Amino acid sequence: MSQLAAFSLTYGVDETSYMIMFIPITAALINLVCILLLNYLYDWLAVRLTEMELLRTQTEFEDSLTLKIYLFQFVNFYTSIFYIAFLKGKFVGYPSKYNRIFKYRQEECSPGGCLMELCIQLAIIMVGKQALNSILEMVVPYLMKMFNTFTIKTGLQKKEEDMKYCNQWTEDYKLLDWGPRGLFPEYLEMVLQYGFVTIFVAAFPLAPFFALLNNVLEMRLDAKKFLRFYRRPVPHRVKSIGVWFRILDVIGRISVITNDMGTNKMSQQGEAMAHTAQTSMEAFQKRFPSYPINSVFGDNAWSPN
Image 1 (cartoon, rainbow, N blue to C red):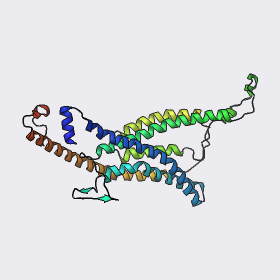
Image 2 (cartoon, rainbow, N blue to C red):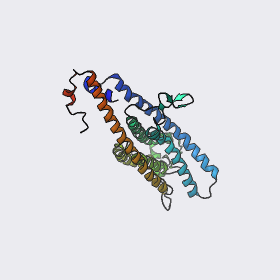
Image 3 (cartoon, one colour):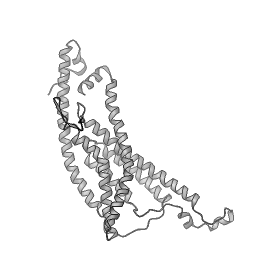
Image 4 (tube, one colour):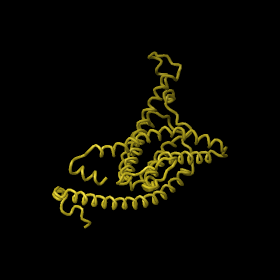
């Protein structure tokens, strides 16, 4: 990686450097599509498992369902990120004895480490999920409202004099119902975003910025969605937000551990990359002593001090 960086600075960007960026981006996009498709399967599975428990009260049912859905979403969204951050390239072995599983070698990181791949994975999954959810939250309710408008029969004729009998409640009935979960998808989206911002902020420092942009946009989109596409929700008195308190507390504890481990790993990779870059440039200068490398990078460009 350091040699590619050095040659790119002197000779320009080559095809190999493009491939180093293209492959992780393609893998992250495919991973995002698989994650979004598996969400529907995990949602159905969580509902079925909760119904099999036969819980006594509605509060117990909602807490159990919330916990199951979030655990499935946690595994679905964060597994690949945890793998790249803490497992990939750790159990490869060495040239004379590679570690194999089912006769296949373990996946390795690039010579510069997995930090760039981790950052790409985080950016595409987080930003892609937010963008797609924002589009679906507006397009799907609009299409459903149009479908209800053409399918619900009000018993009215299409004459101009009969339009005065079309009451407001008749128009409101064409709007979408909230369903049994109410604002649960909104809570889930915010908690998942909170996990991206806190757990992996060391690897992707721009996560809070993208979260802020998403929240500013979400406020306006949700306001329009609630006023134009959904019926007025029926309020229910509850003590608190329930199991979400415990979930947020656990996320905060996990974020302390992961950020500490991520910071240590990035500092070690930074030192290794600096040492590799210095060694590579010294070897290049010994092999090509007539090349004026000091005129490009300076006399003390690779000095430890």
